[in-house]
Length: 299
Image 1: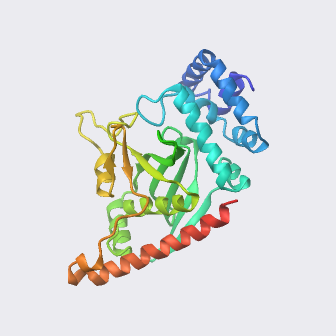
Image 2: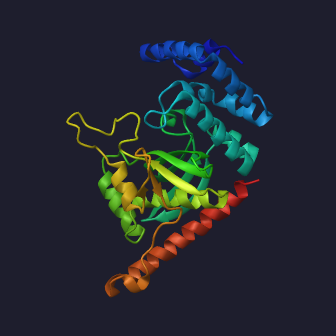
Image 3: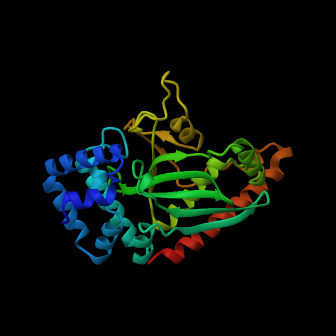
């Protein structure tokens, strides 16, 4: 294993005071958990593919040392989470695809012109997202970022392979409201934040993922979605329930369906049935395109 100092210098910009402070904390925590980090390094040294991932993405050694992913996660849970995520990816996807993702090589999963603007969804990852996950889907329209959804892949308490959504981020441009309104119209009334979740569901199904869990307001580790007056800036939990989710015994997670719930056409008001038919046809085409693309990435 490289020294903690060497790994820390790869992770942190030590000329910035805050980053230098984080390096010191990383070194202290790393020494306190040296045996566990050494075993994690044994895991990443067990195959050439895992070694290349760790070399490209040294944050696998940092993430277990920090209170990331969800509220009250433990050091052991974070180690296991990182290992399981990488294990699953390398079992399902081509090694060069997985290694490339941690070298910041994105994979486009879907592309379509919506509202006259080229719209794309990428499977990607950036170290700046490491607090909430180990991978992300990124929905972009032209040069604008619309939505990102950060997640990791792990076994749930019943040992079923599952996706855990750590957070979701919306648009931050000046005309965000107008852009989202135009996107919703182009998707036949299907909201953009529902579309990024739909794309994630479409990505996961060919991989054989059995469950989707999402971190709730109460389970979000950083609580930076809460304003100083304790009111929510955004409510993860409300959206998870709106998207067909349900509460679990662990208050930190809601479970979401693997398939977007749909109304039967017969249950839709007659004046809206044509709109719903167009929406469903659009979503079916998204499903087909994403699954076809994912199959090309799989072993």
